[in-house]
Length: 359
Image 1 (cartoon, rainbow, N blue to C red):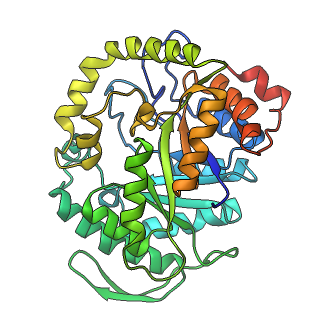
Image 2: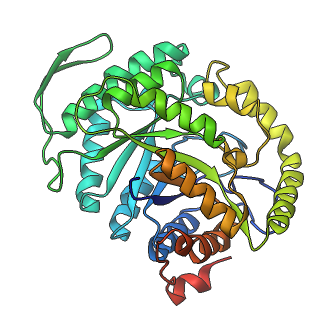
């Protein structure tokens, strides 16, 4: 079993489980995101994922952090944690995006990664007058796009005349001084997503689901033809860990009740969602709180139960757990203090300044 890593979703659009939680006031500010990621790094977390949205996908009137400028700033402020920025290919030309990725790779000293996502929010594109093709057409576009980004970030001189892009002897400098190129993550569970992950990604992100489903997904993608290093696997999950299972279940019920207040926003989100997106088809069949599967991964229970379930996921092939919590900062610390040691990972105490800033 590969060494398990833990990451945290940056709070780019506020709380992940319920937007009206008295214990977690809505906050998508740069200051809150910076403090969260710095504390996560200090505690020993290995990665942070910055979701990319130009407008808030849940509440149009609320704030939304910009992913790539924030990733550059976090790369400069941190020293160890991996900074992963999501990207929707339809929003950036591959030459521009590859150049940005290489610059953040330089700023971070070799700790940057991109996470390609196919996009699901039609309104984000339509309101800007941008095309939003059919699901599989977006993946065909994304395959060509990612192939160019992968080659450009390696420092190759690229000449290609494709369906969507035409490059003539294009070369980017400087390339990474630390490795061949920044790491590539890919999310999505449709057939085109699985094929693209096997072909070009370094790590495939799976949405929170029961371990039997996750093991089946891993087995499917592992069996596909692939050149180079083996593909890694990551899992999104919302964690509710307490001393006893009863306490964890009570907190779960609290968040479920609070999430009821978000139904109007979820209805708008559903109306804006491409119905062919597999993530939302899967999520519609499950009861959970959080995003990207959230508590459907089953990480709700006592400290020992959570550690045992993470170990089981690890044995199934999951190497990186991208975690969500609420209230974020206090639960981030609780997980490090209680779960890290149970899995043989040492949690470092957060510096006093970060402790005092925590909510």
